Image (cartoon, rainbow, N blue to C red; front, side, top):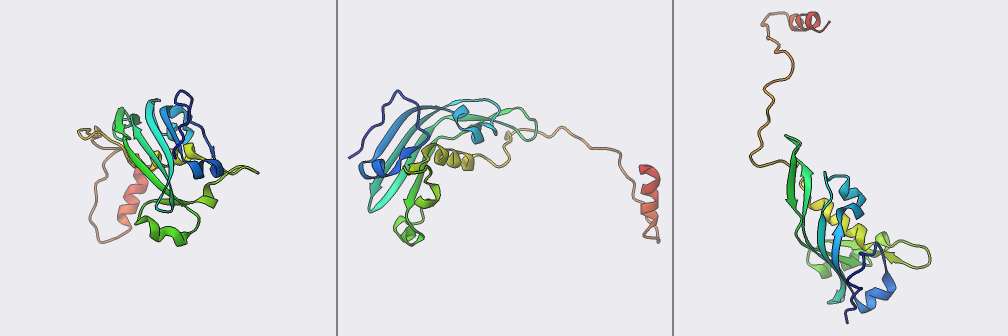
Length: 179
């Protein structure tokens, strides 16, 4: 049985784990990258992402699945101009109670439940933080345009190498130029 969260509301940061793990959870809607502080710190402008979040049980494993469709604006690391990067895709995590259960998930990504639950008294699953982690991992390490050229010819003065028998002669020549 899957229970839908109201579609017109904002995505909750956390859900009560015990309640939703048994009956399932689903949320659909738009999510602004401004709501994801760690992700937005890496972007040059905010954007809206279409997100579906599902928590469900299949084959004795609890799964947290995100379907994301959208684009984010990163700074090209060569020219520093905006570069669009697509974050569309499916992100799926198994929520496991112990590492002994890893054999059940056939190499899928997983997190341990006890490591991600927050809250005192009520145990909360931080679904927004887990989505943000997946989106950050999907970003390129060094974004740059495919056709971007580095426009720097050289930096500083060129140093002519002098060949001599004395290995310290080159250092002496440099000392005179640096001071």
